[in-house]
Image (cartoon, rainbow, N blue to C red; front, side, top):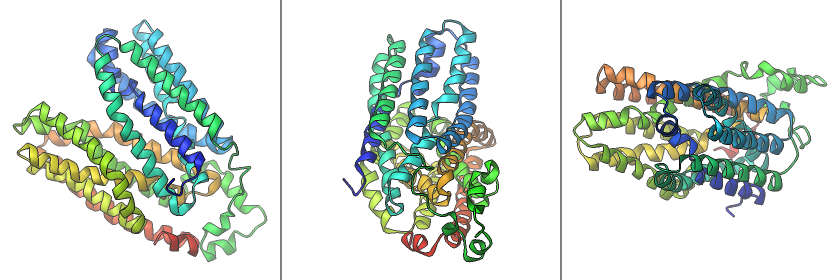
Length: 415
């Protein structure tokens, strides 16, 4: 199907099942406040700490997935998440709840870097955008089901939602163990790191084991300026995108529209992604990776910048459609670009750093967005436009440097 290997579709189905059963994240605050009697302030603090734990979770998961078998690390992270969700049901005091929620953040993303790296292991470079796009599509297909079922059961059956989330997470782990390849990158046929260097760098790296030594360094991630630059760009764009959960509803209500209008607009976001993702994929594969990224950044940041001009629901839906198309692009191309930057032995660690940047954006977006909104809505949406311009300009420089670092054949495949 679509030129992707059977093992990938096993991962895709597992991700879809897991996403359909993702009830803990959207309903966790309700569970902590209504069911357990926790104050809103304390619940908000715990959610923030959970987000900080997810940053660490990505880094730890990436390190482990490069050192051990990918499927074992992925499945272990999922089983741990399932167990912590059950502990959350059993926790009966504020102290225990606090510990379990923070622990949920630490284990919740352990599987993600290994999963993204495993996709890169399974799928040829010229089809990775397709693979990551399909994974993002699976997530968006599962969100409406999780939202509807969770909404129906959240009033009287909140613990049941957590148990169901734990069950689907464990199911994903079983699918990974049964269907995913078992080799680690150490056992796979590794690409010579010299092939990823420029001719000058390659000549200086032709020592017998210099490449293996460089690959084994734990600080190599901090020594890759392209990865760090891309991390900053991605963090900025995701911080803009996460305004749809924070300042966007405030802006809509304060601008004379209603909360129902916001709900309808967000529903349109899911519809646009679900319907348009396969169609946009053709465009992403037709044009170069650089073109796809810069257009996605422009659509995302530009769509949010236009929010300041919105005065009615039709215009609001139009802006949501614009940044939804951008979302399809950068969420599909981002992991593919990171896998292209990464030496094969460090694929999962690179993906872990990338995932930690997304978690950092999720933490910074509410505070930064609210602070800018306090200065005026025009300041906030104008800043989104500035971030978009900076992201486009920086990505052009990053992509140019990345193409010089890649071997000629790989650079040619990317257009």
